[in-house]
Amino acid sequence: MSTLYTHAKLATLAPTSDWGLLDNAALLVQNSRIAWLGAMADWPASRIALGLQADAVLEVDMQGRLITPALIDCHTHLVYVGNRANEFEMRLQGATYEEIARAGGGIKSTVAATRAANDEQLLQSALIRAKSLMAEGVATIEIKSGYGLSELDEARSLRIARKVGQALGITVKTTYLAAHALPPEFADRPDDYISAVCEWLPRLHSEGLVDAVDAFCEGIGFSTAQTRRVFEAAKALGLPVKLHAEQLSDLGGSALAASFGAMSCDHLEHLSASGIAAMKSAGTVAVLLPGAYYFLRETKLPPIQALRDAGVPIAIATDHNPGSSPTLSPLLMLSMACTFFKLTPLEAFAGMTLQASRALGLQDRGTLAVGQRADLAVWNVDHPNQLCYPFGGSHPLYQLIAS
Ligand code: NIG
Ligand code: FE
Image: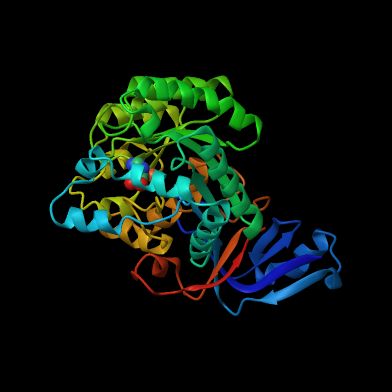
């Protein structure tokens, strides 16, 4: 059976300079793909041209609602237990994120909690978070490991990430982020830890657990030389890379990542002109994370106009994690991308659809076009700019259709 969504307004995002709005339109889904879209008036002739009998098509009246591509959250750390509300309070009293991390808190405290949890606790908490993202229109989620930091615990996180996708009928892309922090068993031996990270990767990859490889390249994370070793290991397996880069300082991680053809560099508040140029020539997407910018009370903005001028694609994601971005609202991120980063609503929305698909190396989603996956978000709004404008509690999603 084919399904035709009728009387809809479509925001196709297909001409990338514009919302690609189509009023009084219809969209046909066959075998989980978009098989046709166009004006309602053109449907009868198109149905015949497609060789479809009228009774082979189930018609669903959308009553004028807006259909967009489903959202894509291209940067999350969904698999962990616990919270870091205590660190939030410490930061409000003057401690910095870096000081807390250097004192053994930060990522390491979530690693301790996550290692102590059982599989069911980890899975259930990740499912609850993924469902919250879906409630705001997300049908593709990138999930990083990075709170396990041992071979077994990293494998467990990645397996749970895969299970989230299977249980909820959405796409999950997994990212190996063992190079997130130094676990206690490798204290003062970061190079030995990186050797272990590189050794675990082929085994986890052979289990089908890894879609991409990431690292935290930062003063409180890993150096560019260490990151390079992780990227070499990924390259040897043909795995794409991405990087937490230039979040708190400029180590030149973006240029390194770009030299490995990175799919994305993420955060980027301290990105330099040479980093931008390197990203442009490698076709690397800039993933901006307004939640972390807000929650860490950053004052240095990513170089947005320079990224725009250079033609580097800009994506937006939640960066959901317990330490720097405990948000589960992709729509709030769209609003913040506009208010903090001065993206236009179209840039912000394309950043969580079209550009986010590029950041994950996915060509089959992020726009409404024939042949694309029928991952659709149906909204109770008249125009997509209304999705970027309210902040908090607006609940505009009518239906998520995830193929
Ligand atoms: O994307 N910067 C490194 N990773 C996360 C934060 C992780 C944490 O604090 O638990 C981020 O901001
Ligand atoms: Fe992150």
